[in-house]
Length: 524
Image (tube, rainbow, N blue to C red; front, side, top):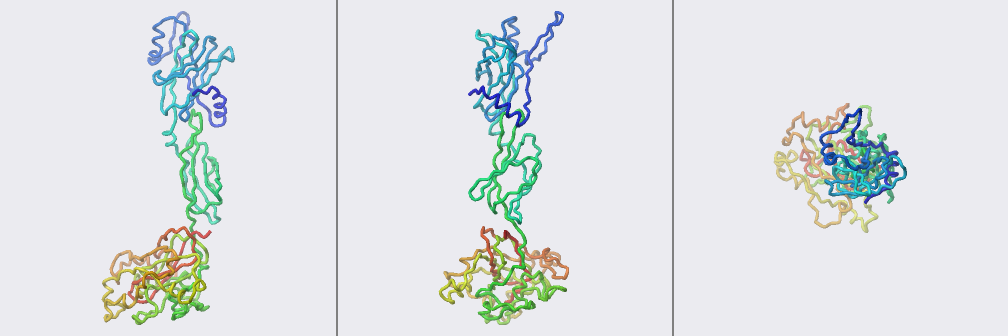
């Protein structure tokens, strides 16, 4: 298809986008000076025109001059000049070794030189050699003029690069921030960001000088579609790079421990406070802090005494040691501890510390544990009876860990109890099929606090094992130690945590020592 109205569109594109570079094809010229003829040519052009030279004097009309070529998407356009020769009736453009051609009638609008233009559509991507030939109405032709040209297409588009992205992040304000790489491409005009907010598609045109972009209304997991617009040198039109999909990442920050509070439920180990009985979960915690109760999980202290100058609180959760009560202990594995982080958040990771002022991987520190969470826990009023409510929270299905062989022969330091760990310290497994709290809460992780050295119980490599444990000293930065875990992505916001400690701990006792728990997540 030939479009002769292309030229005015082309001029506008060239003005708005970039300067076109004209490719001028030199023709063989002869100049008479004092009876001498000077010929400016080369072997290739001699071969092109040889048949005309061999024929000697003939009737030749004016040839195409100053041809410019413009590349498009499966199309190509030309601009050329003809002289004042009134015999020129049409232009014929050949390609593919003259197997393809188009004819363009010449309608003069001026008696002198005149510019012509044409566009060839539906042509395959690739490099071509085009031959321009002027013809009159009597079969006379001009000397042909060759010009090379490139047709662009899918291969070219596939190789166009999007503007580079340094980082995409969410801010505390809820906004999405994009940092961009600098533009080093001469063909890249601008970039385009597309996204959806409340069902409406938003489009942002990004100028090349912009390094930072702020977007509003997006949430974690939303799509960003990013592409770049290029205008090639000697181009006919704009080209869009392949649209790339990016995901708005989670915002993550340290959860504010000042908002944490106890939220006991039936079945929780409520020792040492608010008490050592089955209904202590209903009681309030004492106002003073020196009790090694659940509040020690978020006090910033991982040792079994107060920090100098700090609050008068012994900084670990230390449940009553019921090891010596053996099978008669009130609280057994799995031990539960329920609390609130104070805000709705999509949690991403956590850190847990053992007791920092004891030897690493000793004492009553946990080894295996699970983290469960919910947005709104069921309360007693949600059940027909108190018994149903208590059974719901006291029933927990778990798979406990494995006991080290070195401990199995001497549980709790009493050789007479050899091989009775599960019988002594673990609750009997509940009957299957009981409606319980795990059906309504989500499991964020099932973890083990692994000893880095891999040595057996009561053995450790201080250089490897102690750093992760933490030393609990006055100047110790607890964020530099502890066990780090990535939480399962569940795509819901939660507010309540149930920490389930499984058997065995690191000392094969029926007692739990925990220094600190720390959470990160998105609470905006």
